[in-house]
Amino acid sequence: MAPSAKQSANRCSISGKGVGPLHDAAKVARSGVPTVMMFVQSLHGLSHNKIEDTKEEHLELCVKAFDALAQKTIAWIREKRG
Image (cartoon, rainbow, N blue to C red; front, side, top):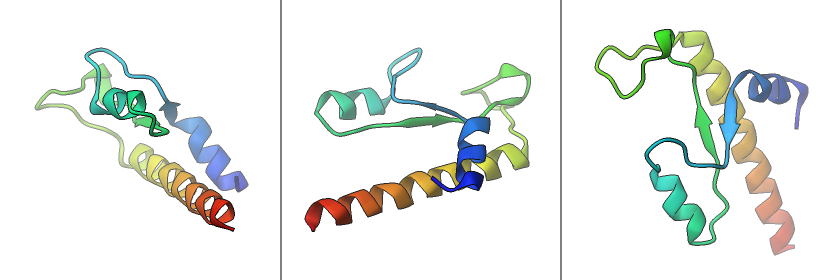
């Protein structure tokens, strides 16, 4: 992973586990599909709420981390196909 992607990933929470009430990702993972969940910090700890908000720079970092993950996954698929 490129240094900037590692930095982005380190600043974002990445988990392969469902939390709280299970997300759809838990169902996907149980079906055998490799699954990851990415979380972005919400201001004041509020989520799933109409006043939920997130700093734009946190969103940008997580989008970069997600892009790095997608690129790595695409490369892995191409390598497997040979």
